[in-house]
Length: 597
Image 1 (tube, one colour):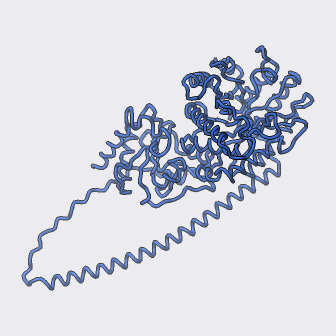
Image 2: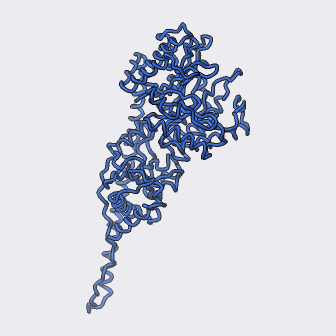
Image 3: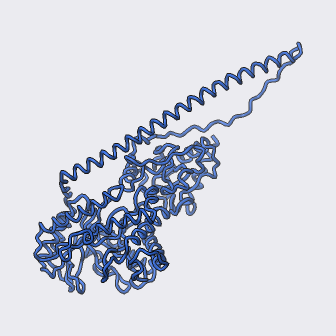
């Protein structure tokens, strides 16, 4: 995975894109893999305004057209009103909550519009910066609340599970020689986790999503800024800070979280050659550290009071520009070599793996015990049923004898009895059961349910190509989203093949881990993106046969067939489901045909 990125400075001024980011030729010339774009309002009052969307569409589309990924910052500049000092203390107040409401609304608007082109968004920038006072601008209490509100709105309420939400980047420094929990931002991160778990429902988010409300940790790493610092000093200090931050993540979180170094850099005020050497040293370490997901240099161009740019204020290139070109080239052409862990780190990793295996063993034993009890109860019920059958058979024999005795000696012919017509059963279509070979989380499990709880057959589209394998979807959901497994019961590819991916007794996450709806639905996912297209005839035919069979087996009416959008805020199963080409009607026609045979 590529890691090298460049901060584009302020991307919009006076309602127009700045030359650094559009046209995208300059950024493409640097060879950067990522450009960090600050989605600020500039002259507009809301990101929902068409002018704002048009300007940022121009920037994002231009960069993506050059093969450059966009790393999105949605910070306080995405809201017209400044946060001021509303969040300095951990005291609830209406003004602070009103500001968060507006921030979350604007955040969701931006994600919803750009999520097809921008896959990573970070939130409030440097909340632990003091901003001229003696305490953090955003108290950990409020930062934890912001993260929970954003994650819930984006992932749970809107169902945008395909984006990565990184925590607002924390400022780390060594000003005055400080190397402690405050300068490393580790205390701030720990306090945020604690406030989230105790005050803001982070545990509920984890039980629904499999993750606390942050998919990664944003970090700004400004250390060894003085001209006396050597490349070895810089790399040792980077390791020290990342080690400290990683320890907090391991202590406080239940899953591995990558670190997104969305700013690091050096001022050329200490010397332009020093800046270039330091840039090289920083990238050489961060590119190779497996804990780091991205390393974004700050910044493209100097601005008043800050000489961190690859370019001077007049646009002339510094030596750091060529140093960045070299690191970008290495990033594109080589796979980073992982940092060899210490013996203590290896021991800790093995202990974590052993603990996970012990949990799996305990879960397996509990499952075996439960299944043995269920089997014993079924055997008891079977024995009782057999006894009932014997008793009923005896009663029938007795009644027959009584009937014979009550009739006259002249036999009365008995007219033949025509048995009532029994509708022919619908046979199951060909189904390939791959439930046992799909990846599952080592610890987490979906809830289970009884079949009589099922009320709906829910149709979803994958938004991925029609031949995209279910195995890769399961890998992504387990590894990146920390789900127990794949979120569908059935998966139908464009050639009409039906794969069963979960047992019907599994209450998987068709509603985005929404506990209200998930036990009620069987999720059938059609592979493809049906925003403008519709499923293939083979998919519709297979889907109709599968739905007809499930309606029969689960004793459900055709009205139980619903689109995913009826349960969660999502476009799935696509705009063509109930408008445009209306493939819902085509699918129901296939169901009727299958039931009529």
